[in-house]
Length: 275
Image (tube, rainbow, N blue to C red; front, side, top):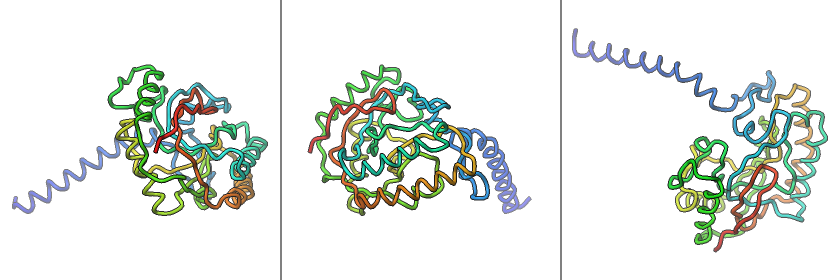
């Protein structure tokens, strides 16, 4: 056999071996993620419940214990934008498919700056590299809060963001307002803060660290919707999202808050970042 023929045969062998290995891995990879987006000709709302949702809520929409810490910005209290978002939450609470949702109280509405650690699935979400993975959640909270106390922001305030209407109205679970920064300067400001949080404070990065999609969670969808319910959900969004945008075309978020929580219903502010 010639040298070129030998290389060709070896190349085909390696390609075939890689294909077999990939095929063996695909089922596990798909099981580990939320369901793929379906076409508009099918039920547009996904059937399997994502793992993070099932850790936070029961299938009946009752919140579970889910303790942890995080860096967030609550929506401004006593503001028109929070009132408009709360009206959307109320509409979900009174809709025909509310029993399929875990609906959050409006006073918990916030945008996550950095997700932090939690005690339910420490390997999935991330855990500080220098804290024992079996340490009590209270100990993790204490250590991270001590680091927060000596941290100084270098970016500017307020953090200026807006609702991404296209993504919020696009195919997604009943869940959230999708958020983007107001401009490139704000994007750099927020991404730099996240990078510093990962390196200096929480000391871990999630797999989606660089591409993390900012959002304000309103509810967790725990069961698939029927086609009629999906249409109703779209109607609710089309009615309320323009009102939220009209209330605040640009949302100004205050000083990021280090919070601890026992579940998704309440985020206790332990410290504010210092400038």
